[in-house]
Image (cartoon, rainbow, N blue to C red):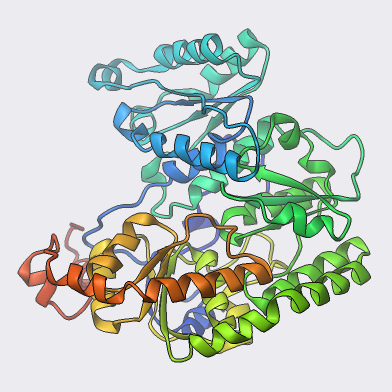
Length: 497
């Protein structure tokens, strides 16, 4: 089958990958249901939050030489301020000059939903050209533009002819999908359509690393194997994006982020995707380096690097394991990155009391790709209390009150605060790269020890915190009440809430 089509938008994950947003059970049970896709996508009669537009913006707004025009009401773009801080922090952590993000909102208003906003969109693109002199413009759609049926494609083609550089529509309307990672697919699809060029030559020492913002631990690590890193897409230049078709292979810190573009690059430009879990935890780091070595004919360099890393870090990691013996860990983050953090916990000898992924894909774009949930089970055994929950804080509160872990790891700062309010030391994994590799395992162990020292303080915080939920919900024992409620409504033929 083909992974990449030249159609304006990419098919959403619910249809393409049979993704699910609700599940509670064990990791092994979920994986077995993935084999025959027997688990339903799931739903709930009440939902607090979920939108794929934010993940789209994080993938395209950080590209240098590119302006982002958001074809949306201004409220949809309120979170863009956080992206500005992330871009500056990431640039400094990589010893680069900080740069400003170039973002404009079309500011769709009530009258625009009646009369249309395509002319307003064209003027916003012209304004971006005047202000920023970009070399390309990305235009993100929104619920509002999708509902009124604005012809973004024609507007983009017209402006591309007028300005003389790519204008790439990104079809990330929030109502299309309840899975926020669909936004990554939409962003990469637009990049493949409009920005990536066919290879003029193959660069045998260049490796695409699809990643988020944050520190760059991969350039110095892979340089020891004689490789150059093409870090994508955050802080990447337009030239880097144009030449991703020339790389020797592609890797990622999370298959949820990059499975679509990695599969498309392999199919369209013969850039192989490395079929190994991301380098989080000792065993996965070894497997990842060896897979790169095999793919690029650098097996000896990979073994040498593994031996050197072990000599540097294994003694400290063994000491950390001893100090962390008996500590119970809970993880909540995006799908495959949750598997990454759980695997680090296993490398540190922590007891995994449970985990929550924000969604789960029952298949991958490339059937030959690694299934990280299965890899986690095979290397470290089953995981109890495994939940799929697309960022529903009201559920997380009840799960944590029931399991009472000693420490929690989160990828999203809002959920980290929930743990702290419940008296649970919680770590925000904002820099997704910081815990990669052998060094990352040691760093995580140190951070958990430091977090545990805040236990008494957080218990005091919990005693004086009033949670924003009704007495009924706090007394209700079942965190998955609204999932069952949705099933009953469907069974009775009633409307969804």
